Image 1 (tube, one colour):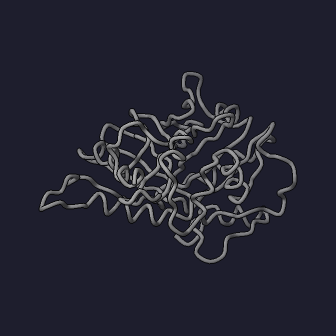
Image 2 (tube, rainbow, N blue to C red):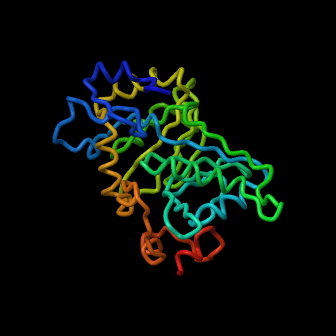
Length: 278
């Protein structure tokens, strides 16, 4: 995948794109972005193409997720930001983890640490101890190019999306996700991020339909297109720990720091717990 499905749309809006091997392929910014805060009063729309999306499924998925992630366990339909720690207690990354089924999890990471995370989770899924594979039967798959991730973030985001739903359907609450049919024809997986005081939706849209939805969302006067530079900056404001993810080198937060950010569960039944105590 060399560019976004929306690349031509972004060019029409005066977009500039990342150089080098940046993980995100959508626009960094637009020439139309000004000093006004698009998240207040209205909402910002951002193409997050290039966000790492992993799918883990199969009978061992729940026990694997319990070992791989250090946050609280999830019920089906819940999502939260969860630390994934290496064996020595250092940080692989802090992705958004969603439980999409009894034996299925989705993982999203838009940070520069996404490849470290992907390699580590793949290793853990296939680990073998004395000829025993604790997660045998688990399937882990990179599905980054199957759906286009869009962020709709701001005060009017809920009102905008509600306009696409029939009367009986509702949007997920904060920290939850679900599949919805927008406008009666666009099936999306929608996650409402657990951000205190902020309203942010992550929409996973089929590539064949994303241009239609993009144009439709921009028809709302309250919706402003922004580059991922603005979104990442906003994330760092909303999530104090997000600064760790911008570091390419080894990152070693303490257990106290992770716990203070509400990222750590009370039990030590996850990989890296011993390293946090040493």
